[in-house]
Length: 308
Image (cartoon, rainbow, N blue to C red; front, side, top):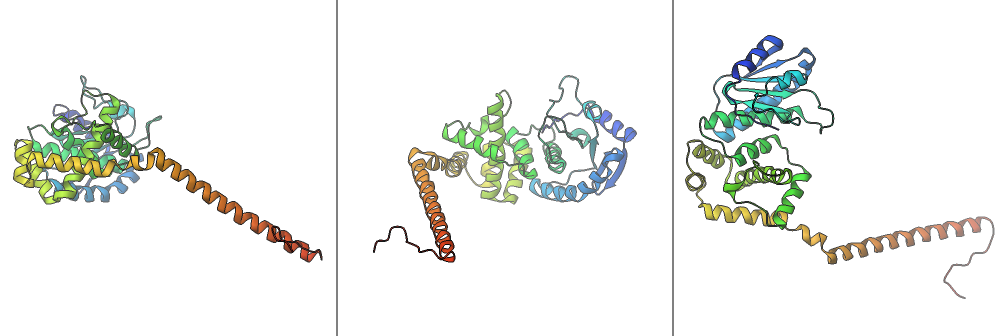
């Protein structure tokens, strides 16, 4: 998913939404959509309400003004919002414009790409919008922007788990101040996104949502990462980094225990034993069935392995 903190496109976004699409107001949201997406809007309304309440609580913020959600029904509608000097990648499914409190989401599936849950995209972009408002002119750290958006949308999947396992085992976890997806290759960027989501989840789980909101508030005021940690979370940067690394080690270094050669041999022996036991039990059942059949036919039966 993509977030562009673009202020100059506000007028064109709102103009298109007003002139070319239907409009429905729902609480703090205004949905703009094609008629074919009306059922989708009805399904998104309660989800948007819940997301609004949760993200606002996590950030300690109630954004001003309505939030416009544009559901683009085709490529033409989606692509017209691309900045001339910063075109959206083909895989982008949503974009946020905090200056206009507007998001644009593909309501259709792009052939050749993984299917996306439009509800998750909405939550992701809503988080971007609210972070943009919370920070104003201050820059939002990459790990917070992407990590919180992914956390709120519940986007964790097995691929991210393996990205982190590989990064931890290879000792490729960057320092927190270097955690960014910019200027990295695809694999490194994917790991940076996964680490960002894991970091946000770690902070909330360790220090609580209220403390997390206070921490974000400190950052939004322009205070340094270290000062915000001490003020809001009551922990020094050194101690925070130590706990974060310990969390990663506990969570992601157990894999060698089940992938070592010793563990593999134990697993193979266990599988062989189970297979042997199943086969032996099956053979006993077959022998018993044959014996029963011979009795019914009036024939004598000798039990294999027994001697008179």
